[in-house]
Length: 181
Image (cartoon, rainbow, N blue to C red; front, side, top):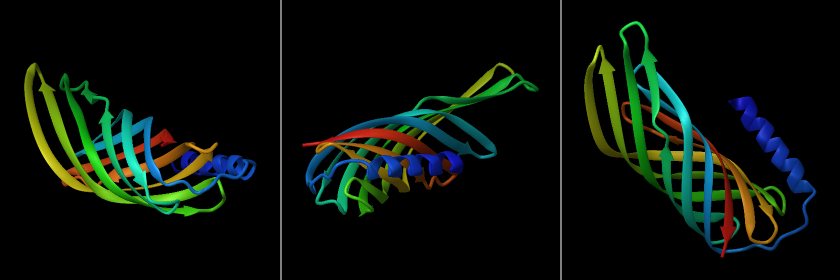
């Protein structure tokens, strides 16, 4: 996972150094992305795809605020020895503040901190018996990423986000496209 992250950062940096200049832009932006979600529940580690959509406001090239809806697909793990399975389905909204460090006219690194509000549903099946549990909670969230401006209004982002879940962990790695207004 770390190797993929580094390859992505380096590739975006090479692309950014060959791009033409763009002016500083402030204002609203929207975006959407997809990637991989990693969800740890107790001793179980589940992974599946994730999609997200977001809207934000950039005050300048250095600071922004963002509202993100994130929806991982249902992840499951099967247990052959007891004929059972664990499935987790969750979705949530993250509110965050973003600080960016422009390294080039078109390439920047960024960090985000915020709070996530989420709903999680767990299904445990064991030898024909089924138990379900649901919870709604909120937790601290943070992330790191890189962005490349493509033209005046478009950009491409590669980011890692983590939610500090009280009884486990939830991480995502995503690629997103944004457009500014």
